[in-house]
Length: 181
Image 1 (cartoon, helix red, strand yellow):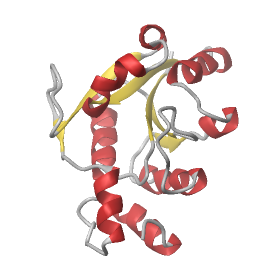
Image 2 (tube, rainbow, N blue to C red; image 1 turned 180 degrees about the horizontal axis):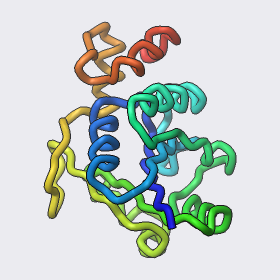
Image 3 (tube, rainbow, N blue to C red; image 1 turned 180 degrees about the vertical axis):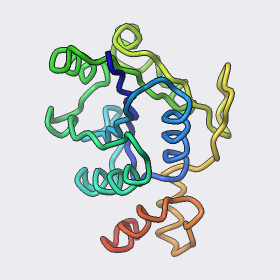
Image 4 (tube, one colour; image 1 turned 90 degrees about the vertical axis):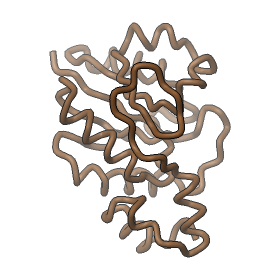
């Protein structure tokens, strides 16, 4: 059965940490595909700076840089605040011939207790833990740069250079749309 690695997040905006983590998973993990899954509405009430369609388009610009990757708009199709367990249950019903893995950054490790039915998530998907500088994570073999979407948004608002923090295609799309100013 083919396995799809799901990489969910706000992607507000996507940055090089997301790109490097996805490239790492595609290069080293046995997953057949990687889907970027931007949140439609953040389940913990976090307000998004850019609308869903723009964030999805930025993810598509990033996905073009990676083989075997694409963007899923499933959260938008399902509507409202979609919890990971509900997304995985939906995928298991609609794609019974596929297996799933879930990419989790070290920054989410402390939030697992807040997730709806994390025990069920672990039954529905193999967990791929990804390290990130600045966050402790047990058993992390690779650690990616300490960069966050919050940092990128702040730098963009100040007119600072973010060319080393954001994939070129994503930055071009941000500039064309005039977001995060």
